[in-house]
Structures are given as C-alpha cells and as structure tokens.
Image (tube, rainbow, N blue to C red; front, side, top):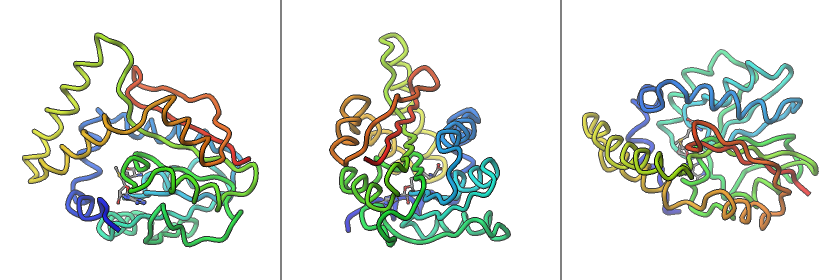
Length: 223
Ligand SMILES: C[S@@+](CC[C@H](N)C(=O)[O-])C[C@H]1O[C@@H](n2cnc3c(N)ncnc32)[C@H](O)[C@@H]1O
C-alpha cells in the first residue's frame, strides 16, 4: 500500500515537541476538545494514534474507558509504547485505517486526530470506521482547515506553507513538513468533507471550529 508511513517514521523522534512548538502548545487543548466529543463511550478506537497523545488523553478524561490505538508507523508506535507501557487501558496495534483488523459493530466511538488526510483513501477509511462502530456509535475527526477569514487566511497559509518546512529543515525534515502542509490545503474541507462522511453512511453532526477556523472537529453517528 503506497502511504506516508516512511514519512512518519522519519519525523517520529521530534514529532511531539515540534507539534507543541508549531501550535504554541494548543495541540493538547485541541485533543481535549476531541475527547469531549466522545464522552460516555467505553471501548474506543483511536486511528492514526501516532505517539499516543489522544489515547492518553482519553483514558485520563473518560472514566471506565479502554482505548485501542492503531497506526501503521512502527516508529510513531515505538514512542507511543514508551508513554503508554504502564497504562493497562491502552492497547497499541500496527495497522491501516483502510483495513481495520476488528470485527463489525465492535466500538462505541472512534477518534482520529490529524490522521484522516494522511490515509491513502479517506472514503475507504471512513467506511471501515463505520463497519467497526456499533450502530449509533460516534466518529470524531480532528483536522486542520484553511480559515475562511480573507485577511487571516494568507497569513496562515504563509505560516503553514513556508514557516513549517523552514523549521522542519533544521531537523532534516523539510520535505516531510512541506508534505504535511500541502496535504492540508489539498484535503477536502468543511462541506466537501461532510459529503464524504455521508457517503460513508454517517449522519454528520455540527462541526466545531477552533483557533479562528484553522482546526476543525467533524463528528458523525453511524446510521
Ligand atoms: C500527523 S500524525 C497524528 C498522530 C496523532 N493522532 C496526534 O494527534 O498527534 C498522523 C498519523 O497518521 C498515521 N497514518 C498514516 N497513514 C495512515 C493510514 N493509512 N491509516 C492509519 N494511520 C495512518 C501516521 O503514521 C501518523 O502517525
């Protein structure tokens, strides 16, 4: 499967610290907001779990929750394992969103933070999520968006497209950070994404925009 796994293997070492640096520490707040969306859920699948930040936040915030984190990148998972090894409520698995190794109707909720745009086939991934969710289960998707504000959008695009790869170059990852910013502007946003969510048999709920519309949480309920 052609994919971005090798890219994430390369950036895994500095992933957490650069994330915090680029987002001015807001990334942690965004993940908290994502987890709030699945309150009341017990068995949760965190797709594109990366270094395990959403899984950790989930078991911290939701009592009686259990999380399975899945990601194809061995290096990202290596860092996740270090952080989660003493936490029995988190299990980490290597695998792809497009081919989830789980039974139908298994999970109460699914989270995916900054991961859907990295999958090879977002529609196929959402269909898989729908398959493994219980009927009435919820998917919560955190992603970057281009702000609608006409004054702020060019400033944001400059920051995202020029500044990120520039800083990434100091860590030998200019190409990788360029991909991460390009993939954001190329990915279907807002109404276009909601259409894909519907196509995957979800009932979209109201989206939540954060940070002047630079970050969004889409949610959908399995029909
Ligand atoms: C930007 S990171 C996000 C990590 C984490 N969710 C967070 O909040 O920091 C994107 C993750 O998506 C994973 N990924 C890439 N392709 C994927 C696929 N086809 N299925 C599932 N995860 C994938 C990468 O390995 C990487 O860990």
